[in-house]
Amino acid sequence: MIYLSRFVFPDADREFDFRLAEKRRCYDTYYPFHVLSARGLGEIEPDYITILYGGNGSGKTTALNVVGEKLGLKRDAPYNRSNFFEDYTALCSYEIRRPIPRGSRIITSDDVFDFMLNLRALNEGIDLHREELFQEYIDNKSGEFHLRSMADYEQLKQVNLARKTTQSRYVRRRMPPNAREHSNGESAYDYFTQNIGENQLYLLDEPENSLSPQRQMELAQFIEESVRFFGCQFLIATHSPFLLAMKDARVYDLDADPARVRKWTELSSVRAYYDFFRRHRAAFETDEGSL
Image (cartoon, rainbow, N blue to C red; front, side):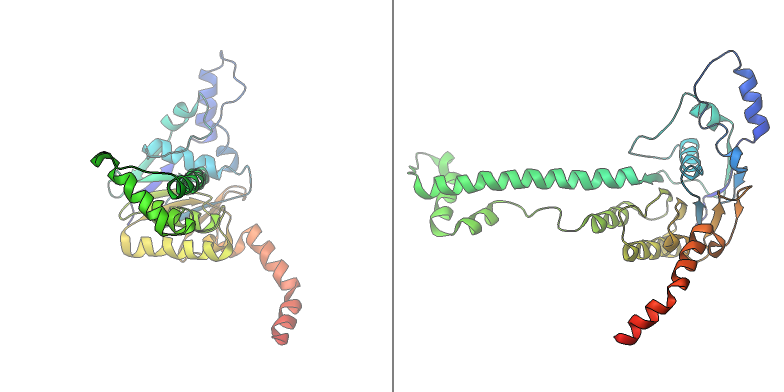
């Protein structure tokens, strides 16, 4: 499903006119002015899957934040913005093919990290509860107990449980299992599958962070299927070759001068991977022969 069909950023001339109007003010930075215009990124025409590619400092995250701010998309984690962010987005414009659904949102690596930290904090709380239950078992096992009223009934059940079972079984019966049963990479992948629904526009900022190559390929397949079967559209900032290789993705190369649409196989980082493995091809063939 195509929701956002065109997004236009201010060019260098419009940015210059804005600076002239602000000439009496002194600021250390006019961010996000002059970031995308310096890359020659005047506009994007999003497809079902659109990727903003570039190295550190290329502006791909800035572009994603500008689009999200202009469209008023939901977001959780704060992001780098200046006093001029609203002035900049006021100069932007966009076209839609269909109304943007209300549940559309931007998901950043900070959201994923916060999710994993919250799981860790939850588990630490559970671990603390486990220690408390160890002591509770000892008290119920060895201490005296007298049933005085129905208010003591729950305590009676705990005492009986302690006296007829082992400490480990008592603790397992009395507490939930740890919420975090996976690695960070698995938890990060779960975050995307749990937070990406049907018929929405999603902006993803470097979703490959914390994901192994295998998980990145699984995420790529999940995104492709969300587009094909569940009416989603994606705008993604990434330099992961596994995401860049998604079928029919439109890739904007922000490292090019000026920024332009390119095939993923033409991108510098992808070519670096290709050249590296080609140089070491003999090592792989030798390893395969020894299996």
